[in-house]
Image (cartoon, rainbow, N blue to C red; front, top):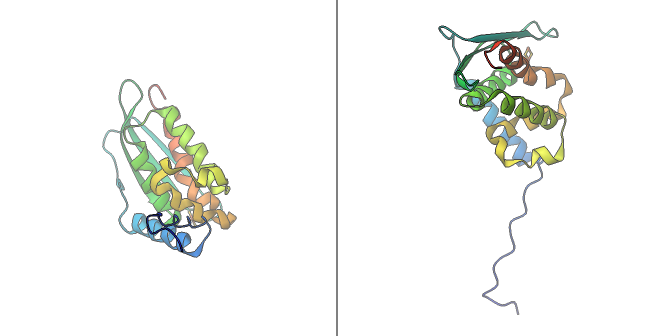
Length: 163
Ligand code: FES
């Protein structure tokens, strides 16, 4: 008979590609699409980047205000794009505000790895909502939709003082 004081076995963690996780990812993407964070024009930006997706003609613009040490003080996005592009832009701005350019470039690399289905990055808990983009990994045609705002961010960072 098992010892009643034994703690129950830990719940198995769902595989990142399980139906449950895919559903959570979809819900997160939809939440950002329906209630985008930091969407709108910015008065007096220090730097702006716009990138178009040649596959569909959509374009996303990222505008930044930057402190003298290079830290992003504020970030906004505008433009046309599918739900994945809009949700990705919304999540990007949340991460960008308060971040240093090099941190954002590293984050972009992690996002690219996530979209490529890199198993290590899928387990990275520091990515927060960005994990929802892992759901795009199974759809290579949508890769560009997800990366569009990050390319616009890179363009803006290159323009920014101390970028
Ligand atoms: Fe145009 Fe996704 S279909 S950005």
